[in-house]
Length: 275
Image 1: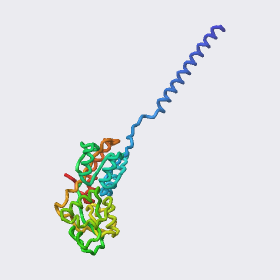
Image 2: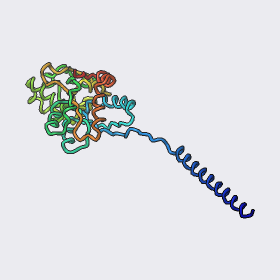
Image 3: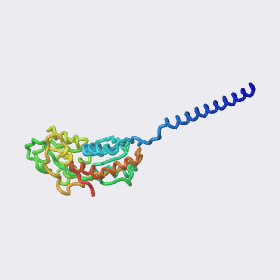
Image 4: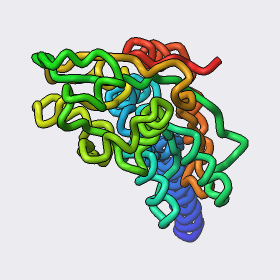
């Protein structure tokens, strides 16, 4: 009997051990399943370097805030300056994803050099060139022709690589006054520098875009519009650049610049959309 009881006890012990092992394995497997978090996917943050003409500063900063609401993972890093300087920086290897120029000349040069994704290139905006004076000016300046008279001692113009300066040169050459005003010119590196010279009264007049007047914080006023046909149309082309770090994100922002929200900002400042 003792032998039989011993055999029964051993069998019972074996069964108990097997049950305990199964329970342990079951708990372990169950625990692993419930504690493993479900896989999630989030958009990778993207920082786009946008090289843009200085005259676009206020418009693009406002548009960027609107774009961030809908695209929180996209950061827009702006480099504002004259289109000529930006062109040179891009040609010298600066990291840029998009380029918005204040004239077609700089965009064409970059496209010819192989820097532009030409499939994305488009004419985006139109602007106007205006002659401005300090708000308290009493010199009686009402036309571009007045610049060659005693009414103007100094006029601020963009230098050779500034599109607004190039337009101004076209205007004064069309009036036959370019050579006559050479000793009166105070050059600026971009339209914001020109605007500043007029705002602080260091010059009697300046040539900028109408949109610069709309966003100016100083006391200035428009004295005259450029004579019709005196300069090439002020067209702002835009394009994604070859080698952009995220081409799709760059294209998406470029497309947004023609969307209703962005258009409203541009038009509020005085730009006209190219149809």
